[in-house]
Image (cartoon, rainbow over all chains, first blue to last red; front, side):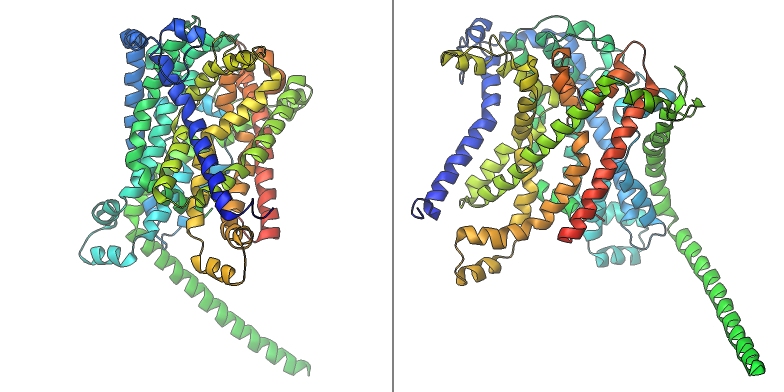
Length: 291
Length: 333
């Protein structure tokens, strides 16, 4: 018995499991990629598994001719870049003062901020707020409500606190103000955390569609994730009710088109993360150290 | 005796008075110091100004806005308007059978997702930790957390593609082995398994990062010591590795329990349709339909349902935290 379950055999089994997990993770991507380059006929016949059948670019050229797709894509790029910069600036503005241990009232402010992680007004009060603020159907509705998250503030604050106090003190003696210290000393040392949080926010904004579903009535303001949703919902032929119905959702779309849209919308964001991934572990760990 | 007592009394009184005076003086001094300190830090407060305004407007005003659950909300009214009607909307909700369906579904879906989904990243991290080749380890890790970066829309699109009754690869396989094709996305009994499995697919690798980081922090000397004591690999895992990552597990569990009911709203909204409401409709989709997706929006009822859920979440978070504190010494606060 123990000979079968010895460590060596376990290692072999383990490599098998890991290989299987990698395969399962990658399969949907490979399948979608293959479908996007295949002909509709081959897809309908179920001939496509790993490799494209009747290799062609029709789905992509068709997609790229859609003006709506381009508008949506441009919107997503705008939302992601504006939203991420705004979020980073505000998060830094929030986290830096709170990282000072002797800031009077700092711990109370931090508690007030952390509470928002556990309780919120919910969907309806937020919706009415956006309407009250006159942000309904305005592009700002996409970036403003989620500009700062308590979790990100916490992670960044912890990182700032980890920067040696002597360094900041020395800079202050050299005549820098608090803001000078932030810009000249703290920020250059905080690239890892800025990259991590920036990527978190960028991924979230890139993938966001629900905000645009409830806050926008104009199609021209919709991001690309929403465009994809309409295509897929049309294809799923879901029975829709009330406001969910919109013009683009009604028609059925071939699977090759769906697949090419999936590829075009997710590849850019997947391309960003290898550059930032070395910072993740550190960033996430820091956030978890203190709740 | 009485005279003596009174002398002592007056003495202590005098001492107390002096103490009080000193206290007041100290307090005044402290306050002066505090103001001086705050004045010195005015730049920091200026920096905080915008973020604080943000939190007040976008987080705390909606929190106050939950009061419209207790008010008769007029269409076009503002968050702060409306006449108070007490628990009227809650009583209406509790009589609504689809509310109870949503309530039941929320609990079943979130708890089965938690029970199945929570241990898997831990097991994965433990297994990955045994992969000795560092390069291979990194490649596996990078690939497994890739799906975390996909939009819910993309994941659901992939699901609908893979599971499509006529062209989906899964059904082609079932047919190949002589089975009958299943319209997975349109059958109540399949909703929960599909939801949970796809969630594991998307987040297993990502959720494991924390544990992998924690594992690398376990003191290597402890393993040496365990080996000398004659512990085999399995015993080392039980007595060294698991206790080493226990704090991380407990903290993650508390947060996960506190958030269970909040999971997957967008995904359910994309996946469900009226045919599968009996298993797929959760509180948040119910709120969405009630408040935003219907032609006659019922803001007050929807807010009441939202508040109902938020209070349950908060209670669960608080309870788990207490239990964790009592039984494991690790807690959020």
